[in-house]
Image (cartoon, rainbow over all chains, first blue to last red; front, side, top):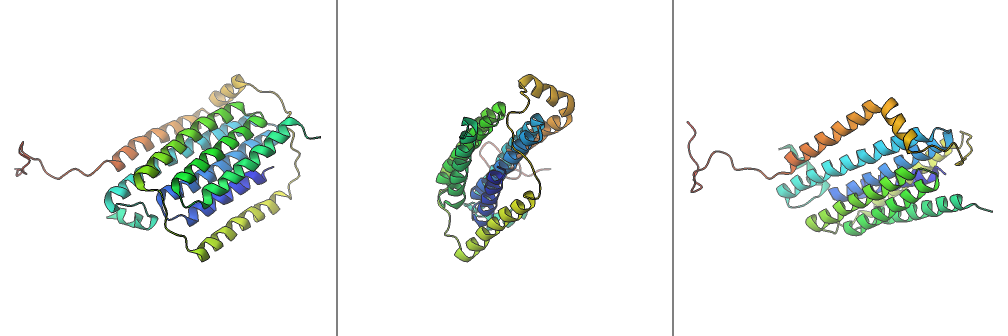
Length: 95
Length: 175
């Protein structure tokens, strides 16, 4: 049953590595978070201490929301500077 | 005969994987965001089937809000991505399959029995454990979220012109 979270994590990894735009990469990271959250909740149910699993799942959900906020702020900055959101243009933020 | 909760679990799992696949492989960012939303809905249903009701509802709410943000920003930044390099894409897909296979082989060494009947715990027990045992991580998480929101506001604001200006917009010398 943990195979579900493994497949979601793998799909997120593929999405993160294959996307050329920052919002696309953020979608991949969200899929990875979904996989991690699922594995914590399912493992908590299996181990007989479900509440700890639910709590860590909650922490991961909030962490995912933080990632979306910060990622889109970077995307806005990149869009102001380069008029696009290609991941390769992120190097330009150094200057 | 499969009981209802097991059927719902596998149905939601299949739906989550299907829409996750579409979200990962779609070139259209808006379509990817909609598929991500559907995936998060099925994951919430999966949580409901194993007794994590609170987490399921929270997942539905947060997943919907996050997908709305993605759809909004896809309208702002543009929808289509460049065509992928097929060799690189094939290598990355093989990497994903290898990731699943390697962890699956490792997990098969551990024997476990899935039993979702478990002890029935309610929201009161969840709240007690959160406050008694995990208060510090909760506070750190809230602080992290606050810093991220403030920082993202600073990062995303447009540049201001340097130096003071007169009413007519001319730059003045600073003494």
